[in-house]
Length: 326
Image (cartoon, rainbow, N blue to C red; front, side, top):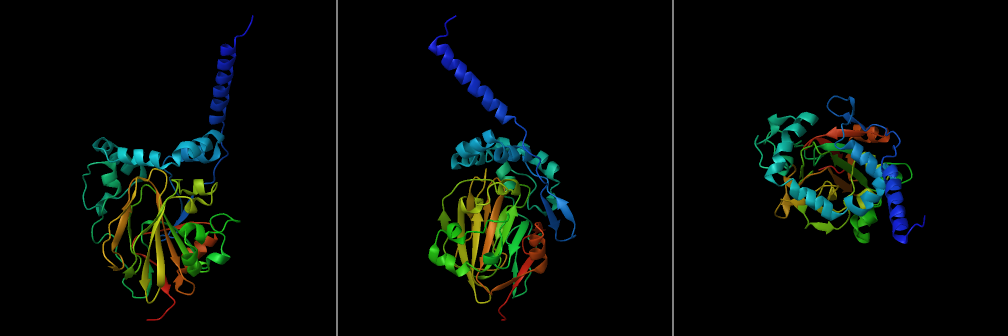
């Protein structure tokens, strides 16, 4: 029986689809759990990851990686999903989300929300996050899990063999020189966290700088495969100048399904703890950069990082002190 060219072409296409399907369901290797220290209790906890199976598939399966490159990292996908989370119909996701991640509602300013993003960008009661008022202290700008490095030039970042590339991150060679051997603090916000970010010190604030980029996940499951994510993703930064801390870079990094980074602060001076802005839907990251010999990062944060674990902190909690005396 003679096989026509059309049948042969369809046969090849069908075979390709079968191969792709087989690769797509090919099991990925087991992933080590994400563990972090709760600073308040000192207990080492295991993080419950939203959409964990999906993340593992995207970054560890060949078809998943192709999907990540072709679609998921693109702004369009994150924007579309972000817009979906703005719709009133998305409000039905709020209660299951709160229950799944055991989120404490008592600190919320309001209890009823118009959409999932309205809940996601929620404000807290004024006394919910006390700010350390000590003149020489610097506080966490967000609720999240911290990695801290006293000297970037001597520290491997996240995974052995990769160093944090300040030049690529800031996209400014002259500015990067100031921080090449300074301190680095990374605060990772998981989807269940409070998603407004605040100023860690008082001082004069610069205008906002935006750097276009991709929308890779910032979850450790993704960072284990792509350690350069922070220098690839969309990000924004401002500089706060303070006599005790010098010029401190405060940068917000976008991530998969983050609809946008919204800056709410106006003016050229800020007080420690003032709101700076918020992330719309998705996990995100705030990065702090310090000049050399300007900050003593708290020892427990440095030690936990050295052991390969993050530390959970809250907005307003002290994370270090100035090396300069008032």
